[in-house]
Image (cartoon, rainbow, N blue to C red):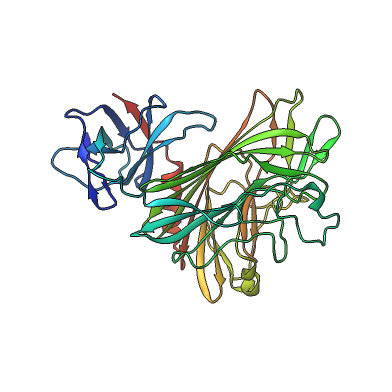
Length: 421
């Protein structure tokens, strides 16, 4: 068995160990495949009042600088704390002993977090990488006040920007917004987004929280959590799913977490949807208007013929799409990963879409060369059976290989055993 060390240097400032002995011990064991850049969650039982500046996970005399961060995550709706540790390499069935200690803050002022949310104009929050007070945008979110009177009555009208929450993503410089908002063609496809267009509940009631053209909406509670960190920035929000009459038929807790990684941006998306309706809620749709999607900047359509999709089966042709077809009920399903390589203003970017095995299946594939990728599924939501989904996105400049995408999928999907000792 290997014993692993994680030593944390915060903003280039060394911090001291608070305890002579490890406070927590965990045994981590890999699965059937070798993993690279595996993010392992160590469960903690902490009082909400307990606060630690940072953590050290140690092994022998070796001291590799592995990143770690404490978040109150776990399954959404829980206040369980998790220490997320990035392990660059974990061999198949390899065991490691992680010993965790708390770290004391340095003397004087607390150094600023490296991943920092900043409030901008128009109720916009921007997650930035803070590099010596040079702020590079990674994600952004705008809190809108829902206005039902602004919902357009015609399909050709500009979509109401207040009808649903979504996140924007940026390139490696922070100067290029890679995602689409309520502008251009197909404004109902926005950034990083989750919803369904064919929902039934309460007998004959129907709702479409994808287009939101008939009074429907997803309304985010103004009380939200924006968490800064040394390696991670996260955003958690509660979202009411509302029907044509304005009433709430389901409630969602949505969480998006961005990690500082070499070569690109890693984004985890998790959502838990619940309902109190006695007969539940039926979630359905089609590949283009339901599920979890990434929509690229509207300008990508100008070079749509250059977009290609990299799948587990290999690289597709430029300008070619493969979709699950509702009429024939045939097409790609349950892909562990799919990647879209597109051109924006003369430069290529790739987004890898990773589907976790625990998310509902059958996951039906959606591809659009104008810059959209996603999957959807059917689900009967009840009080006893809430919906929980997990997805991961990797966004980078340039092109990628299928081998690298597969490694990312293995790291995301692997069943890594974590036992507290």
